Length: 429
Image 1: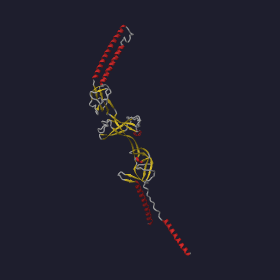
Image 2 (image 1 turned 135 degrees about the horizontal axis):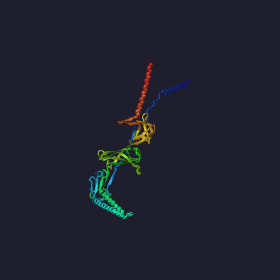
Image 3 (image 1 turned 180 degrees about the horizontal axis):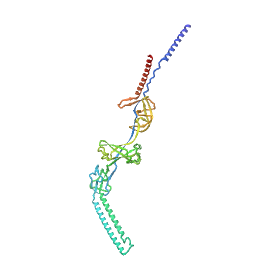
Image 4 (image 1 turned 120 degrees about the vertical axis):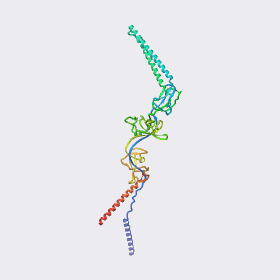
């Protein structure tokens, strides 16, 4: 019995010693090192935020048209006896130049007849004046003081005077008709078209061709109300000496070469087009065939040109790629220090394919604006920020931040070790 008890005691002692050893091992074993690596997150590309001034430029298109263009037509009827050799399609004409002349014989005869009528009326008036003088003397000799106007021949004189005025008017009309046998150019310009030949009979108002002035051409540019605001001009704008219109650069291919001309906006329409809801601004170019041409290439009527109009200027704005703006007025910014996405609201001023200009108290110059699409984005999510440098290489900002953090940690450990060594050395001495 005692033998059994001894065996049990030995077993219990061994079990107790084993339990104590296990507990000692558990207490004294080192804690496993915790991995300090961060989750890489979604890889996204970013571009740096810049600061610059915003210069608005409004682009529009329109057809060049002359400011003045008329139909060449006679005011009287007649057969064409002459037309200028310059009065052909594309010809240059000068102010006062005779373009077409009608036969003058009939109108010269009319002038002669009118001159004869004037001479006859003058003779009749002179006769009436003489007879009225004789009648007055007769009445004075007879002592008649209350004679009638008819006795004094006043109505006859008035009739003769009216006949003379009528004859003079007919003479003036005949001379005017004679002068109108010559159709002259009212301005310096060019001929767009002509439909005339010698021997052709022309009626009053019949079109003989079209000519336009070459001093100024203009382009009607349809723009939206927002673009009108970008130009900084009001509706129904008219250029004055103190309020000049914005500069305009016209461009169009001519002869296979891209040409440019510089003009300006001189006025805008006074009403909004009820069908398109657009507003026309009128841009002009002076002397398109001379000083305003591009190395001799004129901005000719009929060309369809693209116009870039200088607008207003807003200074000191932040600018980022347009794809960095999400949800209308939020910008995605990457923080490389902790590999996190930050979302900030911004005051968006203007957005186009060239970028987005905005104001913000949270975003600074050189911040990394995320341009890659992110689904299910939220503020603080883990991302890996990549930037394409100018030389084409790609920089991983997360690795750069981790490397800097590790370097700082190693520097701290080394400094602590040096402090311990230095302290030990001092104690030994």
